[in-house]
Image (cartoon, rainbow, N blue to C red; front, side):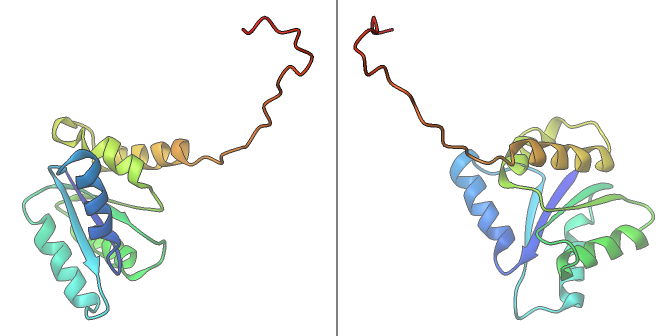
Length: 143
């Protein structure tokens, strides 16, 4: 199983830098940027090279409908001998959590893709500030 993180600009290598800082290198996770000097063909070639030696792949893309997403979808539709899932909108927390478990993962690419989405949803939260009330009467026993 391999995960390919991809996106516009330096999205992929930016996530790689964050992961390395927090958890070290993630085995079986590749990072492919789609920079301004590339076109769809050059991106597809990088994808094909990255997935050459594995049968199950999850593409972790930055934007729904963007070029990296579209090229990953095309590959998933045209390479019949590989199991390829494509996800978008997931977060660094899901990448770290699942990336650290990847070497022992026994499920399918589709199952891993769903786990990415589920973990990303669970980790997407709004911080709600709450007012802390204190006892101003002095009747508190301090506990």
